[in-house]
Figure 1 (cartoon, rainbow, N blue to C red):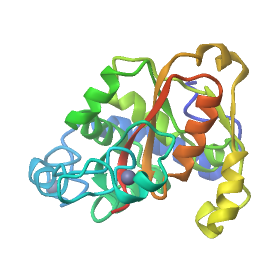
Figure 2: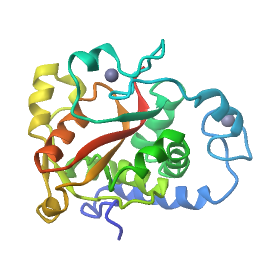
Figure 3: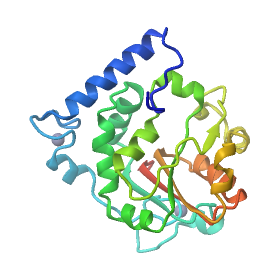
Length: 250
Ligand SMILES: [Zn+2]
Ligand SMILES: [Zn+2]
């Protein structure tokens, strides 16, 4: 059993269904299918027309990937308070249609979408530039409880689907469960929770000093999660921490 599919609650109906769905999704991925955006078929999970329309590259802040106009490299917020990330890349806006696609992937366990999303991120030109300058790709971990609820590790599947030339660090960092979804917390409370959320796995501690690490996440909103994780890795001796995200809130 591969680690990204959690096998610890076999009596849970939802988990069983989710696993069955994963097998079907993998099988269906091999067949011509319906575009997940415009529903046209037969085609790929994202057809060429939808990709041309919805995945145009746009200038973004080098440190937080916010959209930027006017040729600047770094946004005002990052100039004022630089994040701990040395570089941040986003391929898409977290808006229609990607918001719906991500919801289907993550919350309806349509794991067949991982392949299309991973390829999309890997083919974004700045992605390869970033990965060429890094030693490891670290998918942002979910807590054990979240993994059990969901039945799969969505960032790990995404990392694997990208087929990076550098190692994917699985389980390098552990994430404690936060009792309520973080969007329900105020900013100060959220930051306090996040500072304590991540800890390094004992068997990875010695591998971190001197390494240039790229974090991977599906969605970036405030950037607080990535910043907290970057802080944890820098404190452990990482040479640099950058981030690669599929979608960024506009
Ligand atoms: Zn389409
Ligand atoms: Zn910025």
